[in-house]
Length: 155
Image 1 (cartoon, rainbow, N blue to C red):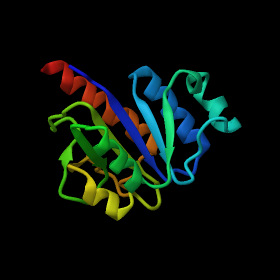
Image 2: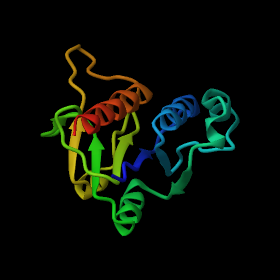
Image 3: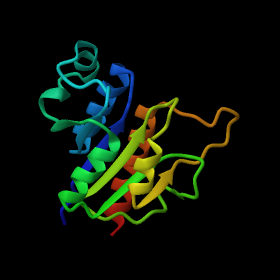
């Protein structure tokens, strides 16, 4: 099974968050597509937070998340999912995944571009029970990717 996973980052602002996501990507052998103004190497703050993972994680840039999804479609990705709350969605550990898989994560204030969500095969989320109903995007990437890993090991 080709368990290729690509993380699409839609307009993330924080180089620290992106550096953390590089570490998660390295741990799970995932690739990254940074969209729009998402910081990518050789950004110094990202490099410091990534702790060397910028050297081992494959990454590329797309002008927008819509362009990134179109690129992935051309590369025959089996499934592209948005990770977002507030939609009719499936919790990350309840979904069946197909590989190659792409997961789109959005800016913490803006979310994922609306047109990009429409191009996805579905939406997954993490349950939220608090008043803020928000977690850091790096934490979200970790939780969802490990849910995918756990689910794929059960097959």
